[in-house]
Amino acid sequence: MSKTRDQRLATAFVSLADTLVADFDVVDFLGTLTERAVELLEVDAAGVILTDQRGGWRPAAASSEHSGLVEVFAAQTRQGPCLDCVHSGRVIASPDLSADTGRWPEFAGLAVDAGFRSASAVPMRLRDDIIGALTLLRAQPGDIDEASVELGQALADVATIGILQQRAVSREEIVSEQLQATLHRRTVIEQAKGVLAEHGNLNMHEAYTLLRRYARGSGRRMSDVAHDLANQALDPDELFGRHGNSRSGQPPSSKEASG
Amino acid sequence: MVARRRQRLQSLLAADRDASSGSAVGLVCARCVSEVSVSGAGATVLSRLVHNEDGDAHPSRGLVHATNETSAALEDLQLTVGEGPCLDTFESGGPVLVADLASAESRWPAFTPAAVALGAAAVFSFPLQIGVVRLGSLDLYRDAPGPLTRTQLADALILTDLATEQIVQELDGHAIADLSWLADPHAEVHQAAGMIQVQLGSTTDVALMRLRGYAYTHDLPITEVARRVVRRTLRFQPESETS
Image 1 (cartoon, rainbow over the protein chains, first blue to last red):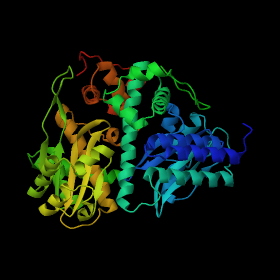
Image 2: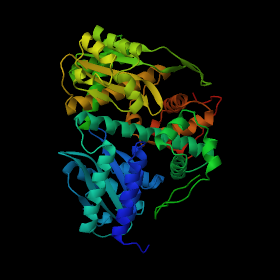
Image 3: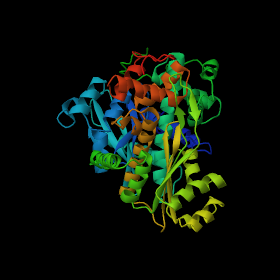
Image 4: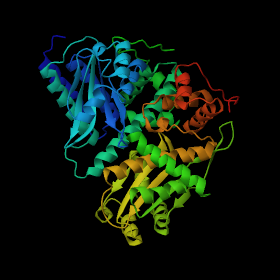
């Protein structure tokens, strides 16, 4: 709490660098990145969307997996600051979403209903391309300040490097391969969340948190644990036996019914 | 624009199916050749066939579709030497795109020289999968080196989605027009499949089939059925009364 922003920034980048090791897991990394974005930028939720390379955009990570927030992030792949950002390549901000129902009829209403009042989106750039965007949502109206935009851009750049799993991409094909692999891993995580949610009567956020906590506790990649769970190579009881379910990380306005 | 590209390929394939008795996956391969400008396309379907409502799954041998002899030989080659782009797609979960195969000899010491000898100069493999459910791979080759353009890559990815849907359709017999369940990694469909597999004590592929079957017989969008499962207003029973 008493830490300065610089200290928090340093801590955040160290925790992100920690995940950039040999057993790197891109889905875990993007999840961590969105959580750090929430802390550092003093926003209430953050998410990453990526190009599906078919002309559409897909949510790839969010600071919480609560269904209300997931719906907001899903909606903004169709309309909203995030989509405008990836199309224009510029930072797009809305200081008051309730005044932006003309601009984004579907998205603004949904976001306000979910408890958010302002939003901004920062592009994830790779040379001349936009491969995705980092979106920031706040429960209060107001402009996002210049320093936060710069910091958001730095985080978006880190996310891009993380997805490519290397700083210098020698072949353009690698970008396509890694983007698709990331979306595939995300799908497997969703299947595993379903297994855990049903097995332990958890909501999807709790299932995600348990999955990640177990993976970290056992020194395995979250994607690998998810794969084993969905493939029945790992008994879900293993996860419940070692760790209780977690209820941390509630967003300010979660309206989710867990059962 | 996006929807148009997908729709266009979907309607081309629908017309192909009306005009031909060939397998749907084979028709997707043929469309890869015409739409993605490759020399040949092949697909190996590795799927397990679902035969009954108890969810018994019978493993089947790989079924190969190919637009020409080189493509067929490339499919065989990978299985024979046990390495190659199609096998690598399952490791990464993403496509394997090699614009200049001759430079990839260190990656696949056995596959590369043999594939080059068969006439392949560039290879592009796409996994046919739904999360952990591996259905096969779609493998394209060119007789001259060079990358896919963005548009060609987009079309190849869409055709991969269509091939995946076709394989599932051939397994369960339910034609489902909305492909969004396949292409959206965050979709509740995948969460629901995980939940249903626990309810049934089955594998993920069986759970997906039951989900699709329910959508089909109740004339509901698959995303709506998934939503009900995730909200816990719909449960599936091991003894089928739904499909």
